[in-house]
Length: 301
Image (cartoon, rainbow, N blue to C red; front, side, top):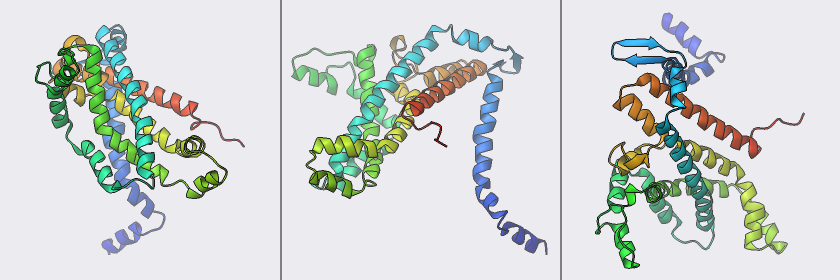
């Protein structure tokens, strides 16, 4: 009897939708809302083993005077800007080439370009650390020798260190972003291109006036996730420098600084403040770019 009542309750057309979304709601509350409120609370505390002290805004006032944190913010921002500047136009161009009717073996190229995304960051970071090693036999230094240049200590100087990080980033994510743009291209009506050809439009004119405007939703999506990924980068830097202590903090990111304070120095209250500042920075940048590109705007009544 009880089982019949439960069955009727679950199959009720008013109740069933809530049953289906319940797993998502529970996971959202447990793994996102609760940690967020806990982080906010801890950011106002000084947390030590066995001792928690309420200190108000002290973590935040200390944070914005912390030169190491400001260095981490600057590094993360530079990494985000450079990676976005490379991982949007080039994957879009590759997707257009891949979508061309003259392209052969499309599936093989898609698989090859997507393989780096499936590779472990630990493995990829280790390989790139060896590629950019300061030894004369390292791959990048051997390339320099071929062109008549001397060896470089790639990972001990900021400009070349950023080259290593950006190279690793582009190697991993170019294929993924290309697939996003490729899916967007396949949603464009071919009749638009046919009409443009009848009107005598060149390849550049078709790309400029049809492809780019029609790919705007995909471009916004790729830009949004690239901003988040750029600001949240940590493991790539950690593996390139074989730890969280790069020379003069040239590879230190916001997440790396959070890890240093929270895990390495066991200052969870201060680390919580760092995490919240990172959250607000990412939200602010994404909201600004969504407003500028017209995604967030009031609809005309």
